[in-house]
Image (cartoon, rainbow, N blue to C red; front, side):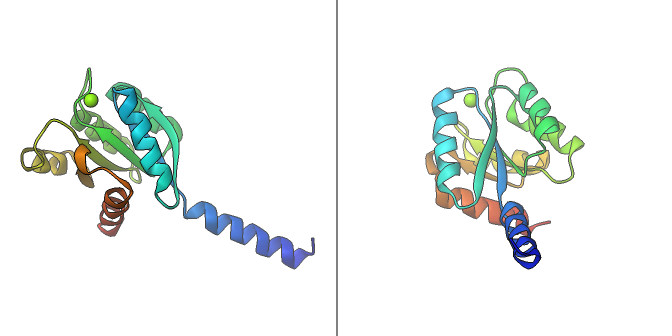
Amino acid sequence: MTLWARWHHDRMIKEIRVGIVRVVIVDDQAPFRDAARMVAELTDSFEVVGEAETGEAAVEMVRDLDPDLVLMDVNLPGIDGLEATRRILAGSDRTRIILVLSTYEPDEYAPRAAAAGAAAYIPKSLFGPDALAEAWEAATAER
Ligand SMILES: [Mg+2]
């Protein structure tokens, strides 16, 4: 490879890597983690780098992996998704969190999600590649 080709190649790889959104999925239910992984992988440039079953494990995992995005279930054993969101954001300037709501009404949880620092929320019933891409755009537009 010539020097020019090498430089061009390296730059291209770097640009591609920069565009990748590294995602951690947090949910206590395996079927939803699997579904969320499928949705993330169907969404352009999203890559799942980790899964956690509890809020406490999520806080630790984010410290280790420094992901771009966490998809966080609200209803978890131990600390809930709102508290895990607060703890993660207290330790990271760059990780953004999208809360994924399950049994709760969005109307009830929207203000609580915002107060905890979540960038967006998606009801589980609406969770899919389009909703995820839209929430990510909203999350990155605000900072
Ligand atoms: Mg749950």
